[in-house]
Length: 426
Figure 1 (tube, helix red, strand yellow):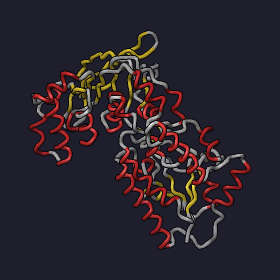
Figure 2 (cartoon, helix red, strand yellow):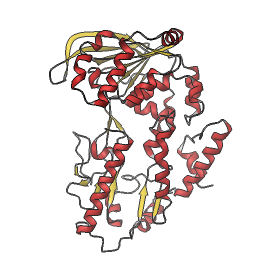
Figure 3 (cartoon, one colour):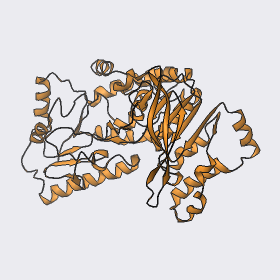
Figure 4 (cartoon, helix red, strand yellow):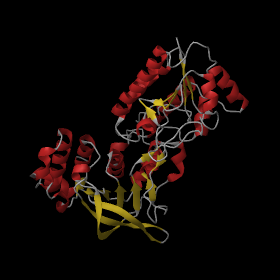
């Protein structure tokens, strides 16, 4: 029988499920229940508020445990690499999502929502989440676990139009149909598309796999079909709009008065291999808010762990870290930032399978005893690091749920590490 310990940088568990999943998608968070069952197992221990790589090194963990699984995701951003991307008014989607979801490091973001038009670069599910949160009527968000400061800011927001920009065409869009359908059905909001973007798309549909086909058909219907009377009426009454813009790449964020006031986009066309190539044309879109949602990047955790900085992953085969016996990885640090929660879950099962196979085959020697958390706890205590146990998290959970009840929300999140630690130790 083996013990299993979980180390987490924040005082609270669940990572991306707590801080990445949109607040109006509570059903996606049900995976928390499985995690809680595991964490409550007698042989499983949670140590929050421990920054692995800083508070304790991977080498120290390797001496204390037979095996280590690195599953710390992708917390870096791919940069646009264009002039003006550091202007006030330009945010990464990851930080913007972190802000409305209560990630402590994003609390100071306080984005300025006083402009009319927002441009989101990227067309994945995260981009659509951000667009939906910017445009959703506040009453839709009131009963979610969105943070109170974000709710207040969105209630005052003047953003009325969101453009979701991609460098390739409708057939290469990265979102899924559920997220698109939510945009199409968003109350008080009408779609605003460019018909020319969809030229030749319906002819190309016959060779496309079914999920992609259904997604594209919904896009075509929204963009090109004359809506029925009821939908026509709904659209004419809408005070907000959203739309995809295809075949566009950012060239520069334009400034006025020292902040973002627009974005210059290069116009692309798709070549045979579906590569976007520049046509030499550009177009300027006035906007006071630019959100870059072009992908996440994993970062190296510790110099003793191999890292492929070009692909931004830990080099591995089936989750076994190359040239590092007893070291495993799972999730986005293993595969790169692709797929939904179910994809990542299956991927972690594969890593667990590799680990169990190695125990069976003797490739992983578990015959000697290792001190595990005993020696690590001593190291942490020596360094003044106070770990938060799962029962400490349960205190936080309890306070958050009680605070939420007052305003009819599932929870009102604590927003600083300091508050979390105070509650956990109360």
